[in-house]
Amino acid sequence: MRELKNSELETVSGAGFFADAGTALGRSIGAIVDAIGGKGSNSGVQAGTTIGKSIGEAVEVGLGIFSSLFGGLFGKK
Picture 1 (cartoon, helix red, strand yellow):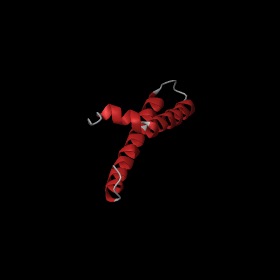
Picture 2 (cartoon, one colour):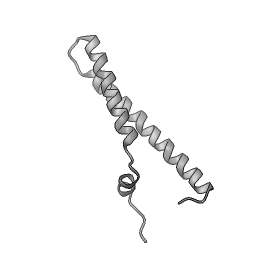
Picture 3 (cartoon, one colour):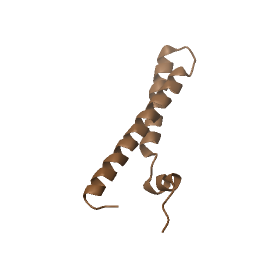
Picture 4 (cartoon, rainbow, N blue to C red):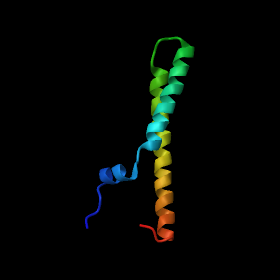
């Protein structure tokens, strides 16, 4: 049996959910900031999107580490 590539593993495990959710939340908050600022720029949307995606990716990495650590302790592979 062969090992899965990272891209295959991400597809199987549903990876990206938290990054996608963080991106959407950050984009929404950035849009609100831009609307309040009234300058007509998308800098708030861009910053919010980047920050939200980064937070979501950090959560995914943390969950992956947590899962592999405790999965290894309890015999799950």
